[in-house]
Length: 234
Image 1 (cartoon, one colour):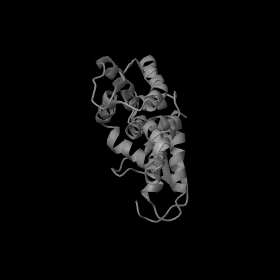
Image 2 (cartoon, helix red, strand yellow):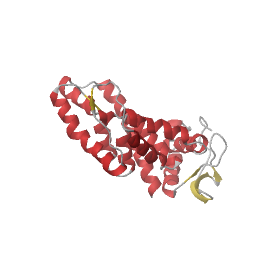
Image 3 (spheres, rainbow, N blue to C red):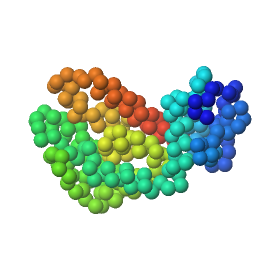
Image 4 (cartoon, helix red, strand yellow):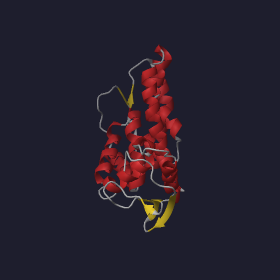
């Protein structure tokens, strides 16, 4: 269907077994693997409807981010979520918040001021205390903490797991991603925390506009993942 011209007049949400589908002129969309495109909430389905209603001529993947996510979840994650759970849980071993700069002091102090509260949150809310170290050499984290983080990841259903995947891989922090997922931290704040080092460097040496443009694209994806979690709770 990608690359085809618009051929439908009406887009609608259709209640069905297991959730809500999206129909073009009464025909429910299917995934690339030909499974019915069914999402858990009406709010999520309405977001997909808005994407298809917004197409004026040619169907382009970039115009259908929530549709693409639904396709990926249904075709690739829902049946075998284990590999995604394990991949995300592994970020607990090297969480961004745990690796601190050797210097200068101003950066180290800012990292401690802004990151320590979220390591404390991880210990308090998830039961996963993590050790912060100086430098980039890997330092093993407590096994009970890693097990608690894995359990927190595994508690996500496939659609939430897909959103969590974006939050974790784009930020480099499983702790920040879980904080967003649980509503303890908003996406914009989490994104800024994940880019603390880059922000500090820009303050010292000036802005790299090309790098900032690339970061803005990633930020948009990050915030859309937060939106996806919100749509799944409505």
